[in-house]
Length: 52
Image (cartoon, rainbow, N blue to C red):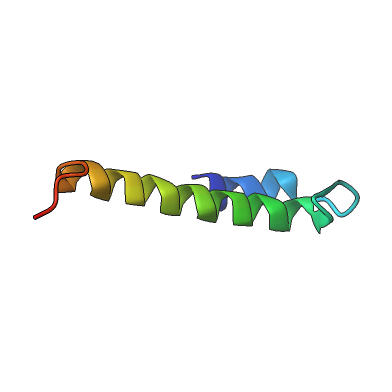
């Protein structure tokens, strides 16, 4: 939802975060967070740190 709805409300040129336009920062942030969440779910579903 953040990547679908966020750009319509956050598309501004002037605010910069980490030397990136805010919209680019927003997309990179949520792409990274989504990857981390999927990795966490995979790790939990796999059974934690137990090797197979």
